[in-house]
Length: 293
Ligand SMILES: [Zn+2]
Ligand SMILES: [Zn+2]
Image 1 (tube, rainbow, N blue to C red):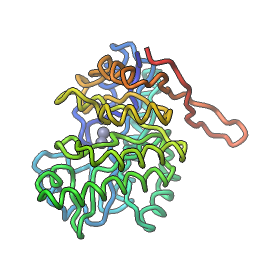
Image 2: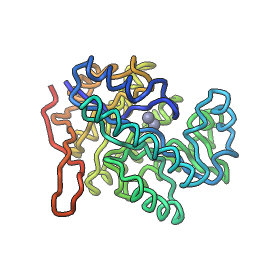
Image 3: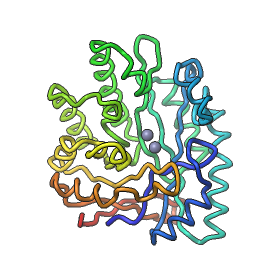
């Protein structure tokens, strides 16, 4: 079974534990490494959206930034802290980001500028929002929309996921069918969108995660068994993620997640290794395969 997670969240963003506590737990679980990938969500209207008020009540509003500089000032100290803990513990900690992709020229330009400054080890691509008729909606807002609106919103959602894939900046894509979180997108009518998306992922040489956080509520992971079969069919490299927001969620349901992967016909999963490029004087993440067992 997989003995690491690259999709975890910490305190100061919307996680409940410090980097140090996460590493302590990783050691306890006999993990080989951990990746910390907090939310990188930058949109000029993000603080005007309905969900922002909820975030403030829940005190996790820090994950939302109106501009890239604001996000930079949140990630810079986090990455320094990761480096400090790594030095003290001698435990491999990777600097990641769970990036919400917004398909605008401005966003894409600014994104590269900030990434060059922050130099994360890896990037997880995600779509948590849909810009619908000038309103930024999250998954819970999608649920509140009318039946007809939900269909339109879901269509935009899948289109956004494909745009994020085409952007080719992400090491792997997070929870491909996130609207399933609120029970949306299960109908057979969505199979075409799903296959188009997975085919594109294959064509772009992309990777996906099997996110076990869904198993806290239901019998399927993100993505659903239907999509897992497509991942197997198109031989998309996959990695298990716990999406842990606390130490107690680390590695949660990894056994069940592995079983779902096997049942869908996924034979290999991937794990990261850091490669030192002496000529360019940089370290970068590379991926190796391991058999799913
Ligand atoms: Zn997410
Ligand atoms: Zn996450």
